[in-house]
Length: 86
Image 1 (tube, rainbow, N blue to C red):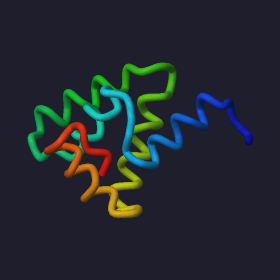
Image 2 (image 1 turned 60 degrees about the vertical axis):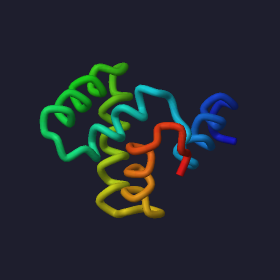
Image 3 (image 1 turned 90 degrees about the horizontal axis):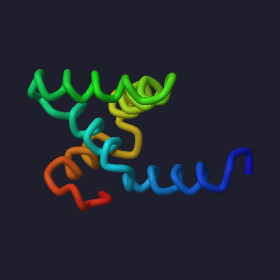
Image 4 (image 1 turned 120 degrees about the vertical axis):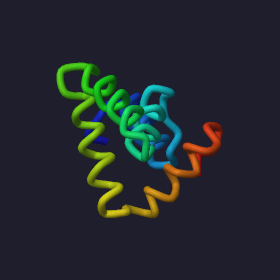
């Protein structure tokens, strides 16, 4: 109730790992062991908005580090099957 209905909908979907293609590329890029792909994903993500990309990266990295709700496992599932919401 403290945000717009659009933002609320996007957050609901993100909680199920259902997100826009560019967010998917960023998440998979961060999880990928290939340094060149990770670097490209980070650079691309940092170009989004004034702080949206960096905010997303911080959230991803903190979530992965804390393994919130099995996030790392779920992102790896998305990396192998793009249509999976994990």
